[in-house]
Length: 204
Image (cartoon, rainbow, N blue to C red; front, side, top):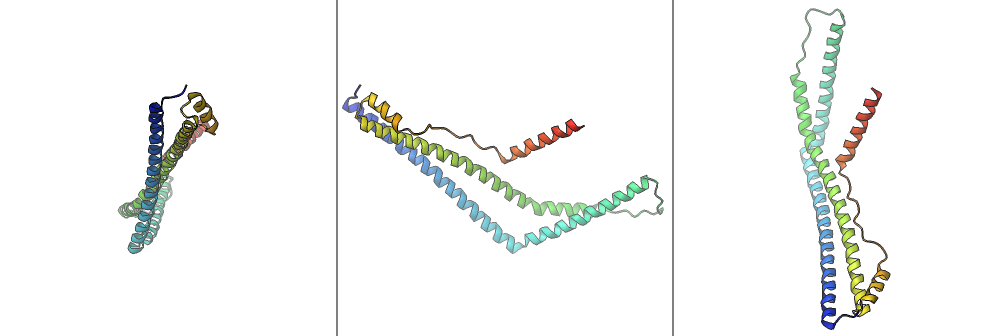
């Protein structure tokens, strides 16, 4: 069956419009991906410069050392309590160790470590988003290629539906598919914790 000239022009216009829209969508996603990458590196450089100015890394090392010292003190105190319960003879005056310095040090460590945790979480989120965008880009490129094949087939068939069907099957070298979206980074950690809990339960 051959199409009439008016119908032929309408179908050709629809195919060309669909191809153009698909290309625009693909380019838009690519530009969005590039914008995200540039923004990420700009933020990283800004954060790195601010870190140099404030000396946050050195502060973090100091806080970690203080935290280790506080943990050691708490461990020694715990050992003394354990020895007293076991009947070890000690002086009637037992020195008391205040927990306030340790609590203060831990709070300082958390305050310093929080920006780093937020930063690495942002990296994971951006990486996941970029991976999703890459999947969309590949899918849209497949769709654009198929639309172009349809347009070429329609032009070569000159409106003959039977020839169009044969030509499009010849030009299509692959099937269009939408890849499986990646799992969130947190999901792998959750699954590992579940497996660990199951293994511990089986051992008990």
